[in-house]
Image (cartoon, rainbow over all chains, first blue to last red):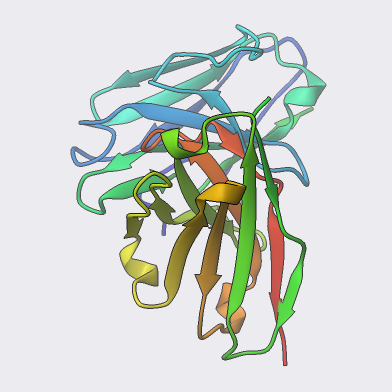
Length: 110
Length: 117
């Protein structure tokens, strides 16, 4: 059971906009910044969004993040086939004194 | 460019220990924490702990306290993670990742650990 709650799956067609949610609590998302990681099949996770809505160099601006209260969201616009991957939200948890991850959302591009 | 290169796959018997290495390059080794995260088959990501390469200080997730040891060798810019008393539940891909606390900005390629009698 993950500390952060994500839907197990999401899907969309090419060009569509999809959103992935991440729900936490006051001891994690509610008081800390949020990061998102993308894991393509058979590869290591990659930092996609940090500090709620910042993109590392090289990440397309089709990816965006937001946060409200104890929840966060990742939005992907102009969906492409190469976006098919697992997406994880993550944040620091004050109670656990360490980073915690969501259970992951498998994005399928139809 | 920043690189974290991990040691190869391991096969261990139940009750044994495994030691995985993570060699860093492309940045000042002592300036960033190194975290360890594992991923069991078909499961999500689980944080195991971190080491501060500058001081050698560590912080472990409660789940692994007493079973995990993280160390570093500064001259070779290498971090090690040793997990003892292995069971089948420890079969997973183990990743090292660099980061300021909480944000893992570069990851190693992963090391597959198989636990089988």
